[in-house]
Length: 278
Image (cartoon, rainbow, N blue to C red):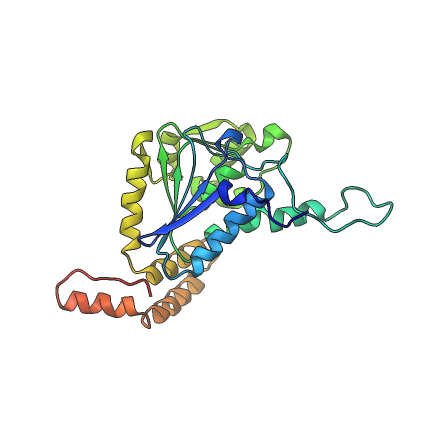
């Protein structure tokens, strides 16, 4: 069996233009759910965009108008695994945890650790792991008909893909428990009220709104954004002393960049800066 599904290039599309990388989940007939190959392709693309100096911002969206991502496609093709010895059970202690770590956790981490801002253009239902892709994005624009669903409890499983880490940091522990215990729909307007979404727009205006935001970020000092993202993502794990030390170290690093010098020069010359991304 191949290590890659031959259909994955069409199932997860990737393009770059004007500094904007666009990642699109393209299986609307299956709710834009992710099989293992699609999940890993997304991870690889986020890691690639992070290292690509021609990429200044990443937009994550999905095809169709009904679903953004409905989580894992458990019935889809699976990559090969090592053969088990005779007499070994189908599942051995450690198998499930390894799958989670190497699969959805790695995908969510690739968004959190991406050195470029990631905008989620949420065009429909984001359920299960799909909801946690939303939570991992740096900025979220939702269509007014979109919604989040922490569906896990209805499937008899617990939230994975980093959800129990991400959600309470955005909405607080009590609301996180409500969403995860009851698995009710959370409409886009409610997401905006709670800080999950930055903006909610009519569905037919989603692309325009996201493009405007992406264009602004693509013209921004990319390394300054990367270090700002790093500081913000670490803030809940840091003491004040550690946060201040890391802020000073990050500022020191930033002073070596071309965009830092351009920003100062443009300020002195009273003109708009032209940032290059390095």
